[in-house]
Image (cartoon, rainbow, N blue to C red; front, side):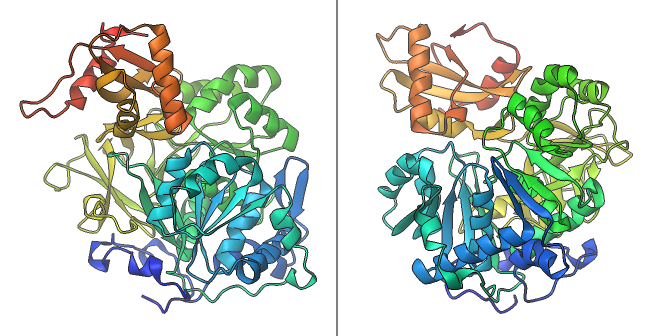
Length: 544
């Protein structure tokens, strides 16, 4: 490893042993980066040095900042972080905000000052926010003033959090105004210093912190961005995924900033809102989930596609019917993609005009992928098996024993079952674990079970994904009630509201089936595979 630029060595100290890392094939991917680098320069300051400071960098509600204007805000925030709040290189900073230009400025200010950005999704509740605070030993949080209720509640569960500063209401903005804060020299960080920790739900429901280096943020741009997406500086990027998702961070910020294009960030990004924003801002590249494209079909047929020319679909399986319907209505072939938080972004994709409808696609140039059987041996084409991949990015969990399950013999092993055909196209079959992918959101079934079990009416429960034509999958709960409790629609609503109040609302069970008993093994272990079979066959249990 290269000499770190971090004063606080927490991240390096809590990386997995190098023997457990995936085989990071950087040179083999045709990439090369300097030993000393800070990606805030590559994504923002570089454009000023090249004379492109007047180009529009980021657009939001009533806001359009050039790269020069964004750079000054980044510098001012970085000065506040260091001089007013005591942040040092290597410190982790929690960032909580909906998608907007100020969030982007804060994100890059943290990185420019040598910190590690830890963003959280806006919909998370207090205990879900507290988990990364405690796991990553975070002492400083920057929060949109409108989201302080859950942030304050999380602080009560995280004794290590010492300071919360808000923005949008004037607190951070006031500190930024000092005359000598317009310039900031980027921290002298190494290419393999951690600059981002993205938390993702695991199959047990306990989130995993995925640690990514400065060079990783460039690598996804220089592989998928440059070799598959092929956007131009004249493009305007827009989409729905939160920036706390690496799908959103890459698609809405990193890819446009790498080439000097523009990012359009909207806080309200439902399908209809997204389509109208595409028209309003003249967006040309869109990143969202198949569910949103399906929902936009009727409206796009009425008002048109605007200036859209590239549409990327990821986050869940893209049904063939959606792909064909979108192309028929707009003339644009959806670019399907498979990524993982562990890999940072997309590593299998379908470049426009070169895919087989129904297949996810082929390996993004710079990555490798194969199918392995239960013994870890390569599976022949046409045979279902676990998907394994490697390339310039890969899994490095924050102090987590699950590292050895995700990385085996230098390969990253995803929770997906795929088939590769003789032409090198990958075809999705199923999840290999208890993760439910619904409308682009990853939802861990056991986490929903744990929430339901805190309700006094429930004796036992099991949660799985059930097929749904609109969302791909929905969360379905099979519930055994306590003696004397009568199932009805009112109870179902009460249980759903209970989950919404306890964990992120999008995780609530959209269907609840009341059963006399759950399928179990002889040792008493819940057979979720049997529940999945029941859900797929639309069982006849009492459902409200």
